[in-house]
Length: 331
Image (cartoon, rainbow, N blue to C red; front, side, top):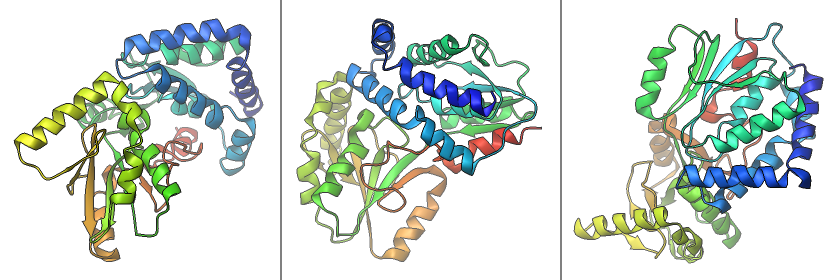
């Protein structure tokens, strides 16, 4: 899409999702989304949609993006997108980047997140039926591919799409670094980084790094307030399961009633569990981070403020790979 047309689309999408005449249709797709994925509570879906509206449906934000990324392709390419299904409409950023670059988006939907993506495609097509975004069953004869999946599926994607330009994303997680001067406001923000979306996203903090003698009491006081997660049966079941495992295996831990906290140098913790890594000095912290760099999505407390992990800017690209640059340089 030409830049002017794309900005008109963004303006239209903002209006579409705030127009009361579309409310019944939108609610229908929200209900379908909740029913197709047991992790997608209505609250979670609405939170994701609100974040999308604020972050992606801003003409001003896209104009600022274009100032930093002025290029578009001369000839449109067919870009296949294999979408993840861990969070509601999590792949919309890739879809918009493909369209913004002037390419055509061909979407392979996740079985766990069809309804919301269908809603956003429907909204786009109501703006212009000829808009180059298509939902397909198989990615064939693509010029490039962006695929998001697990470490296992990522290896398969890399092999299957080895002959064409591609971005393959695998499992990642996020960490928070605490240094001892955090405030209650910081801890409240960190609670959001940990619990939002029940900890399912790559931008969720699953591990915190703290100095050796760091007192966690003040943080625990804030984390224990997030009891809403226990209202979701799958989160509650995960929490109870790992509580039982910790007790049976005599793993030292803190039980906050809604979250289990244990010292572990791994980066990715199970749902309902927060890992703590204790570092002796700045050098040891940086060495520990460097060893895990390829698995880290966000570094809260270093590059991202507390409470900001779930609010990426348009050019805060997943895995640190500039998706837009990739798209405008397809040959």
